[in-house]
Amino acid sequence: MTLSVADGSLSATTAFALTVTAVNDIPVISDIADQTTHEDNAIQAIAFTITDIETDDNNLILSVSSSDLTIVSLSNIVISGTGSNRSLSITPAANESGALSITISVSDGSLTATTSFEISITPVNDAPILENPILNQMTLSENPFTYTIAENTFNNVDPGDTLSYTVSMADGSALSAWFTFEPSTRTFSGTPTISDVGMITIMVTATDSESVSVTDV
Image: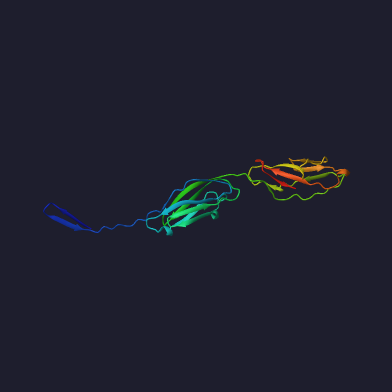
């Protein structure tokens, strides 16, 4: 570089070297808006961009983290796209709900930029499940009969939800006169007489707090 100074008639000149040292710039990642979805629903194609002055966008390194791996594990977060235009797909675990944050990091190998956003997953009531069907039972006339439905017969997958139990004959009519059912203990009891000899078919219905039910016959 040359520097000159003059008084209108005479001038003087000097030269010197100016060295500009390169400084690595941090990559840039766009903000992502908070997301809301329902339980058991995936969030597809959340768009975002990445750029860097010195590094080709295709060579930038992306990584992701989840604040709650029970609700959203890393294997259920997929980043796709090329260049500066990328997208994110998130699949929450089945029957999970709640709030969590997702953080995406972009690095040029030396410097890293991050962006975070919140996900709110609204719970959805799930129907109870018949997991262990009730086995056929047998008793003799004039002999007391007692049978308790196992606690693991029906499964209620919603946390904090409770099941209530009702029973009826398979045709929907009331139980035989000799036969009673106590819902609080899930217990059948009674003593059949000679006139009650034969086979009866019972429907057992488990209903959750949202009035969704499942029946075993």
